[in-house]
Image (tube, rainbow, N blue to C red; front, top):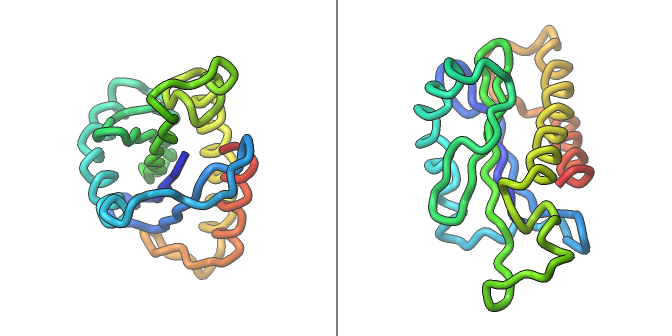
Length: 164
């Protein structure tokens, strides 16, 4: 499965972006987005912001699960208390012939809406949120400023390897 993660600020501005692939069940951690799709990922995430705003007022929770779908891409969302959005675009891996074996059907990459996948994404968001709070507590950080910390990027990558 390929992932594109973005943190969107309170003014709908991107604060952080990271692209990675699955590291579970023999994955190498490399994203497998096509060149055309790679250029559209940011637009796909931003197009789901209206749905995020609707869901945040009706759901009442921080983790909104899968909120939108664009062709074979799914968008999951996590809201912070300060109205910053964590969006994860995930593209399931294509299986040969369109069929998957029974063993892989419960893997994180097989079904983007399965309880196992939802739990893995929730754990990923939770760990990234903890690191986000640590990053914005820096006295040098201003609200809605882009996060450029290499340490934060490494911690997001580690959370991706750990859960996804």
